[in-house]
Image (cartoon, rainbow, N blue to C red; front, side, top):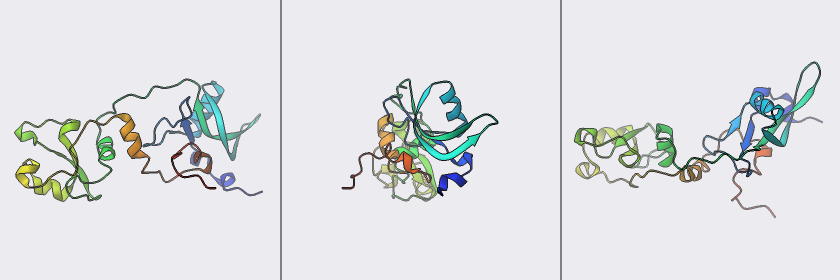
Length: 188
């Protein structure tokens, strides 16, 4: 019987990684391991296999189906606060300019400009499109007459995970769907 997984290159078969409580380690970026890392973790008995691809890899002495979903045997406690990175900032602000709402040419803006003593912190940096950033210049939003849609805050890891759930990656194998987006309505 033909199955699309059978012609898939092994590099196109990442394993979704779940924590020991069977929740994804991360939504954005989605917690996935390359097939080689997943196989190694299986042999080291660090994970349980939840589901498989139809695709196999072979050695001279063995055939092994590639895991599509694995769960860690030891629970990894997520950090309470995420690292302050450009990507996490964009995720906090839902990949939208906090002045005009545009999703194009994103950069970041110091709410209180550095020239006026503003620091590079979660609470003083917001996502901005290049045109709004240029228009605002070295002024505060009040001085520029450009109010922010939402005041910048230091997000928790949970908040970023919730935002990440709205941006699914390009590849979602059917065996992953039971472990992701479980708040969607079930079919009757």
